[in-house]
Image (tube, rainbow, N blue to C red; front, side, top):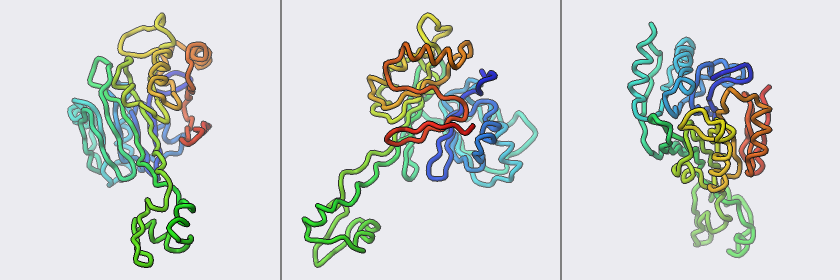
Length: 294
């Protein structure tokens, strides 16, 4: 639940000018405004499950988009019963959206969108619930000058043409892009578990993730107040076994202040981790830079 320190879950992924939302708890619209992220740039919303803290911000977002005369369709993805929930949701007020809303119910799926994919996988939360993976396509390697020289070539304008076409002919010889470039660079991989107790599916889909956003509601087993949630040691164990580069501990119970939770996690977790605050920004790269919009 929200408190004086923070709001409920919603994660914004920015990629090539697009904004993707993972969950949309109540108050998300206000948070977007503070973060200066335009709701009009949101094309896809992925809901993990239908507990209020993960989806009740959807109505205010849709109404605001309508007030701003949005025409572009909005795609909403979620687990079983998503269509029913959205239909009932839209009937609960006296308004009609100015744009089409496409609802997609998912099981375990692999969705392709240009330069990236979103994978969904089932988690254990006592209700239909999903986790999600953002997987960027691998990027081609850089031009390798040694390979170019081995083919008796010199760097020149032909490289731009080869980059565009994938293969060209030079002096009667066909040159493929992979003939003169290094190994492909692995695209970014980000995993979000939503709410779940530890399960094998999370570990499987989190393998070698750049960032694993794993719920860790409780610091320890002794603190566990209800089932179908994870503890800090459990989340750390998943990250370690999956060989995730960075663990983001998420969804802490409101009983803990930030400092209490942080101090406890530092004693309990033996994996590289961060505990984000509202409006923190994580830039994914070799070192994963963390900053704040506040």
